[in-house]
Length: 431
Image 1 (cartoon, rainbow, N blue to C red):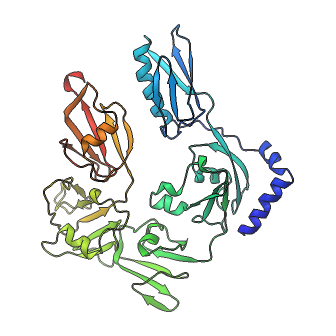
Image 2: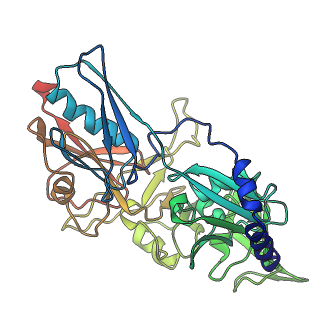
Image 3: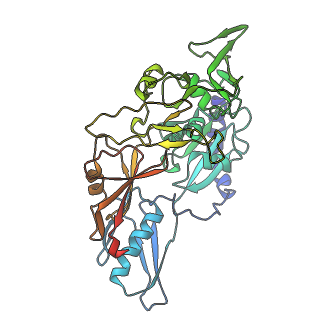
């Protein structure tokens, strides 16, 4: 299939049909999303001063991703979004010009033409923004056909090839497996691999999944949308021919079966996410979080350990009945002192995956997203964001945990976990 697709593309190029295809390109007619559009070299920004005699400005992004202007100065917009550029420019321009309203727009958004062929409904050449992703342009081509692969897509740029796994990008949140369009020029969707397994039973999306090297039961259940709340985590088995197997390496043709709980009575602890063996574990009095993780074989390679969150079920709700709702238990951020968390009946523990960034917002010079560095404290990231503003309240700094959705006040020496948001408040008298 892949060989035939290559011949097809070669014929298009050799007989000049690709030029004709360009004339029928599907136009990119949806609005630019400032929150996702990435500023690229060559982009031009139009600055319009509303109800003012000040003339409009056009600023061009240089090859290093910067704006260099004799009045405005130097602004580094490398790997920044259009939304960030607008906020930054308005902040600077309002100090330079006595105007109330400033409008900033991109005059010519960068577009790329991508050839999409293989197992899609409408092969051809399509246009998209450089900050769109492979999945966006495949949708323009009508989506992957029934016999197409979603885990072995090839994204090409000259001799360079990137393997795109849309299943993992969607169900595990690993967006690096669904790259931006500026990384290549050709998308090849091969036919579905014959090496497949089925995941059925009490999962959110029973389906057939292409098997790839390194896949295990935990990964494949995630690619089936993960367990339902009613699933019996400890009762997962493999059907291989006429045999039932409890453990072992997954093989093509296997059927992974997740059973439903047979009883609503539950005196166990749930552990799921980025661990070696997620599932339901028997509760014993005095068991700690470390004990349970040890039983589960420890964290997986990409586990975000510092963001591990315990969700606890209240004994009774407001009506005196047992509640299904759980609330997060705050686990102290890394300190020099060790802390032991003793678990309770019906606790649920979630270990998220690494995301690789820390968000900084509030009263700092350059709020935004910054690469996560292991064992770095609060002040390291604040310096990365250009430091405090004169309006910053250095005694009122918070860290927001997106997993537990809790916010805590912290001191300057605390280590910042991967994926956290640092919030620097403005002085009370200046609010």
